[in-house]
Image (cartoon, rainbow, N blue to C red; front, side, top):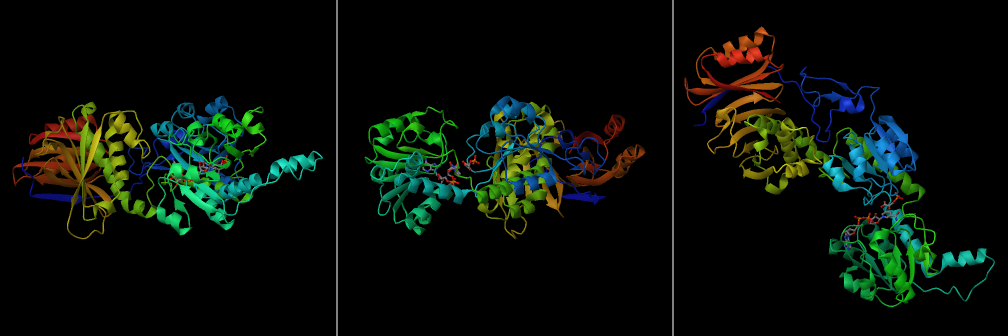
Length: 598
Ligand SMILES: NC(=O)C1=CN([C@@H]2O[C@H](COP(=O)(O)OP(=O)(O)OC[C@H]3O[C@@H](n4cnc5c(N)ncnc54)[C@H](O)[C@@H]3O)[C@@H](O)[C@H]2O)C=CC1
Ligand SMILES: O=C(O)C(=O)COP(=O)(O)O
């Protein structure tokens, strides 16, 4: 079938819409919100939602949070501060909550997400480490996880330095002995820091601040971090070295990497054996990076002279823990982030992130979703709406939705390939493709996961256009391969169900169906008819719809040649009755037609 040479369009109205790439439930059920259907369309409550004055989301704050953060949360939501919940109590409460804020003391397990029955949209970790949150389960449930990665950096670094100095001068032990009435000046002779080698393991935010401060104490600082840029280390006079080199040359080792599968028990029997005899260890990162039994053995064997620990594999550690009770070990109860300043900062940082996410904004500190800068988001917003609508249209054109397995998306843009972030667009196309044919809610967080789980393979291609790269995209084309269509004209020359669209004056438009060029604003719903091009068709269809007060918002005819086959695309604000659709189908010139919900 040849492509049409021309298309005509008639724009009747263009109500604006709001897009939200994080909302994944009809908020009306979750928040008790007022749903305003801007298009007055019964089937689209999910898309047009505003919060009414009394309808606030509920945020469960499960661990102590600074006042400034609580104040911000309370301006937007009902805030339930319930500390020390048992895992069962947390699971019971969570089904009534839209967001959960925790620190390191609460396990946000798979059961928590399952118990939330889809209501939980955001988990805020008021701090850095997210090892207490089951990120896989969060992603599968489309729940965004945000953290507060910067506000406690200095506090953690200062605590690391405090432990380093306290350990090297036996401050804790000496203090306890004085309080016990003893005066043991010979017993508590310490070691000096100046000139000693400190190996910083994990040269991120905290590690580099520790390094900077240790340099100030006259230490020779080296660091191991497979992902840290060497120039950042060099800028503060630190050499990046291999793991083994760090272990072999350090007098002091300070741990600052996250707890991951790769770092779990990274200090173990084997690695302690590679250390200098008499090494001293500081851990302000996570207890799990050390094999605690191996550490006790290494202390007993004289390999490790002392350890200063703020974190433990199980917190709190048991009272009779051999590690904690060892006289060469000093311990603090996970106090790294516990300064007044850090806690206020963290509380504000996490409150802003959680409120922003609940409003549907993309959080800059998202842990399980792409972080898209605000500027890029503003620019992409109409394309995001277009992407979702093209996905919805394409899948509704398929005869039998479950056969949708291979989808090709082609972006035409004058921008350089690395100047166009398509993750958001891809997620929204996936949402559009999956939601009409399933009960799954898809958002930016779980789009790739959901596609993979359903065996949907989505490939992306770029067409690089000449011309001005002012707008990020010229067009988006969605093609579904190896399927039959309920509207044969939607199959293009390539044999795929094909729809293409572009953004005009900020509004998404459908510009191609199969090989037919059309031009219809993607609002409300859509009727596509293939007919023999002839005068009076627009009038005939229009009057059938008019009889039952269905408002036509947009109409466009794409044709091969005058008086040959044409595809008429009609945008309607209301859903026509089955009877009207049947009458349209019965117009003698109409060869096929389909009604599509956007
Ligand atoms: N005790 C406490 O209260 C606090 C503990 N922390 C913990 O400190 C750690 C570091 O926090 P930030 O510096 O803010 O994080 P960050 O993400 O800025 O830095 C972590 C660094 O570790 C590196 N890394 C990852 N895998 C590694 C490996 N196998 N070997 C060596 N380096 C590796 C990363 O490349 C990154 O540069 C985290 O575990 C965090 O949870 C942070 C704040 C307070
Ligand atoms: O931010 C981190 O990673 C911390 O370990 C701080 O934990 P906390 O918030 O004090 O329970």
